Length: 326
Ligand code: NDP
Image (cartoon, rainbow, N blue to C red):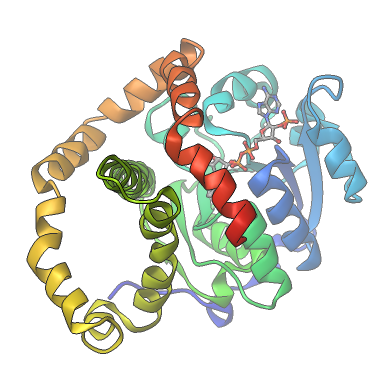
């Protein structure tokens, strides 16, 4: 089994006296900045023009010193890029690239831009990655509760010889080594994440939508179909996460449920399509499609958002949450 780094394996002293500039103050930016500050790190925030970007005011309200991105990069030892992914290349080439100097570390929370070459960092700096496997608000809440979110680190360029130690120290300052951090490549982090988004998130959400639509079409009450398609999944996930699939099936689910899962479940899954999506992701086809979609102003996404928002299931969901609570 691969090495799992915990607090006792990682030394924070590599970050002592260093300045970490967090660029972007959204979901991850806010959570990671606050956690690292509470771990004793010297954090500054780099934000876009405050007339167009709300990050500046948000970070200042949380007590951080905020600079224009160019200035934050110049003041930093570690430039931690937490901008939304598709915006990264333009912000990087406008405000970051020309201000980097040898000896600095460029750090990311997703490998997309580096893997696909939309950002090509200079050769004389360390390039690393630290990803907490969860949204910013959860990363923050877990840290406050004394826990953390498991994560991964990765090194793409190690000029100093200490790149991995730096990435691990960042992961510890954010709280992830309280739970566990693994080491992987930029390629696996990025493609694994994109594969998960397509298959797990995509598959689960389409499963919910299809199940709801079939039940309603066949005369079931909307509230019942909605509960079956969405609410039930909570207890399944929590139980499986706690005890594993086999123990869930044999000791927590009913025998009828166990039979249903083993007998009919495989028919719901299209393994061929899952393999195809995996190969497309590995060949960079998913990345190309997403970059193209973004550069065109997201026409497909915008169209789908309208249709989905108006759907029967969404309307039922609103009533459901009002009547049955969250
Ligand atoms: P958000 O969308 O929450 O935040 C994006 C930030 O980027 C905001 O502060 C926004 O500023 C800033 N920004 C966007 N465009 C520009 C621009 N043109 N100029 C200046 N600032 C800009 O992103 P996330 O926190 O979700 O993602 C950050 C990174 O973390 C990504 O690489 C993502 O893949 C990774 N990640 C995200 C996870 C998640 O669950 N959210 C989990 C793990 C990793 P403003 O709002 O002021 O415009």
